[in-house]
Each structure stands twice: as structure tokens, then as C-alpha cells.
Amino acid sequence: MNVLVYADDIALIGKNEIEIRKLFVELKHIARNFRLQINQEKTKHMIVERKNSLKKNKIRHLKIKN
Image (tube, rainbow, N blue to C red; front, side):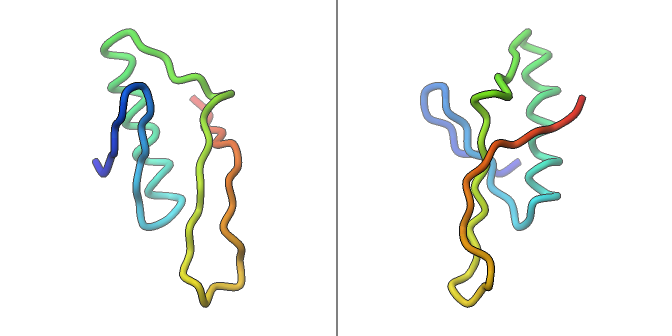
């Protein structure tokens, strides 16, 4: 799992959105083992792409269904 953790913030790092979603689902399962919940209203994701890309970098909410 590629993660950066500081206090109560966690950054999942992946090569693409599918990899990030898989990491998020795994993180959710681990959190459940400790009786923790992830607040999806506060959860955001950011896509950073190479400078040559046609898409702009985005920050938006990440919605993962159970």
C-alpha cells in the first residue's frame, strides 16, 4: 500500500484512478478492523498528470460505494 500519513490525514498514492480506488477499499477494510470510519464527505482526491497532458489537474470528492 502506498500511503503517506500525518496526524489524521492519509494520502493514497497510485499510478491511476483504479489503483487509488483499490487502495481506498483496502484502507476502508483495515479501518473497520479498528472500528474506525472514513468520512466520505471530507474525502477528496487529486489527479496529477504530466505537463503534456490535455487534462487539467483536478481536486474533487471521491465517492466509493460499499
